[in-house]
Amino acid sequence: MFLKKNNTSRLEHRKEEESPSLVRDWRSLAISITLLVVVILLCIRYPGPLMWVESLFQWVGLPLHSGENGMGLHYTNIFTLFLIGVVLFFMDRGLNRSKFIVFIVIMMLVNSAPDWLARSYQRVFASGVYAVEVNQSLVSCNYVLKDGLLTGTCQVPITNYSGDLLEILPIIEFPKYWGNSESKLPVIRLTPLLIAPGGEERIYTDRFSIAMDRLENISGGVGPGLIIRLTDGVNMRRWE
Image 1: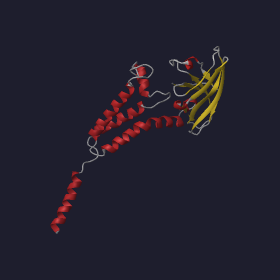
Image 2: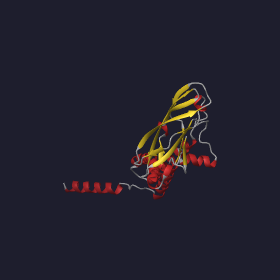
Image 3: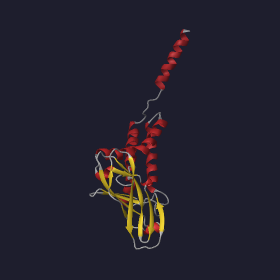
Image 4: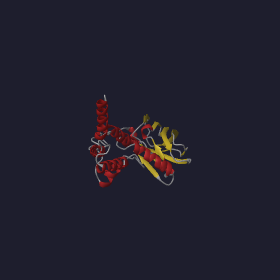
């Protein structure tokens, strides 16, 4: 009986000794964390719609896509995925266990941390037009062109992350590469909007009326793909 008890105690003690520590290589782990921070920063979309990695590619003269008008392979996404692969490689070398949990945490950080950082910056440091954000995917305009008069309404979802009431002028433009009647419509300057603070997305609706030389009668509606410019009278930001 006593021998059996001693053997059990020795086996449990041996298991504790053989259980590996969480970190295998601190240097590899540090490289992994550093590269993860770089990936998160490169994925930030601010002050416009482009990620910082896309702005970096444009700055050095590299194309963003293999095709025209955003078509084909997205080179910046491929580059970002390559960096994430390098992060996972050094993470695997740096850790002995809990690798799957760390992998899930890394994916969650890459997905949510860039937006969180941008919103935090807007809340704490930004002012004016730099403190607001546009949900470009929900912007829409309906229009009617009749007897040389273009009328309609536009809806612009805007979030003001600052604590101040802001007056913002939205300017909406139809992309030139559209091969239809919308590509020939003028730039729409809406009435300046008072954007309430609070950090909640609110949809602002405004009517427009523009005289044109075109006499044909057309009507329609346009959603995602519109070019949006916001100005506070001093600075301007652009989404396209």
